[in-house]
Amino acid sequence: MNRFCALIVPCIAFLPTMAFAENIHLPGHRAVYELTLGETRDNVAIRGAEGRYVFDLEDICDGYTLNERLVVRLTRDVGSVLTDYRLSAYETENGDMYRFSTETEFNGTTEQSASGKLRVAKESAMVDYKIADDVSFDEEVMPPLAHIRAILDAARKGEGRYAATVFDGDIKKPVFYAVTRITEALEKTDLSETKGKAALDDLARWRIDSVYFPPSGDADAATATPEFRFTATLFENGVVTDLLLDYLDFSLKADLVDLKVHADDC
Image 1 (spheres, rainbow, N blue to C red):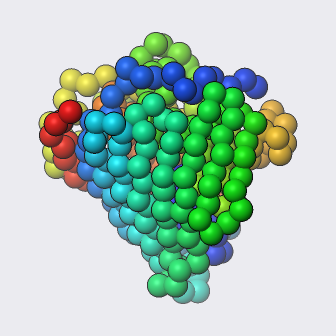
Image 2 (image 1 turned 45 degrees about the vertical axis):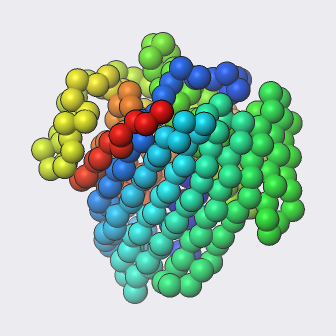
């Protein structure tokens, strides 16, 4: 989620994670989204947005590699901000290790970077940062792909809610408490402008609404103010469409324009 939260910088019970969804397989795929401005609220001085988000996942049998890039220009009343976020990561099949490197530029200047390794045990986790102090947690923490697979597992079982502590990768805010509502996808997704849309034919799908809060130790989850929210249609192969990224004072729409499913060699 760091790639999404980075845009704003310049301006209960937990479910088990280790054996969370070992039967859930994410096929490798490359999804390209066009970004445009959604709603603005409370007199926010953002007048437009345009950009692109690329999600490239590879299944390498013992785990997954993930490369992401999000580039978006936010036009304000005075000037504009160009955000360029890049992620390169590897995550094990069972979600017990996540190795990552991220970098965020604003108007061509690097403002944020982080790299390291997350290790997850049954009731604890530790982050070994390369350029910051290590951080430990007295609870299980889910890396990003494990979180997606767990939501899919809950959806397949007909559960309407999934909650977990999710690793973000940022040094100042390494984890969030994510609560996801899962409902039936009643409206058919419009993919008329999407290349490669045949890969989603006849697949099961659900609507998800994920809200990200500060860690549960920071505040009461019942009264905490969320920091980020996204809604999407989630297909059973892990592809998302109809994506809306909500920063509470403004939102971005992410429309899937190109999808390529990689060959499965495992």
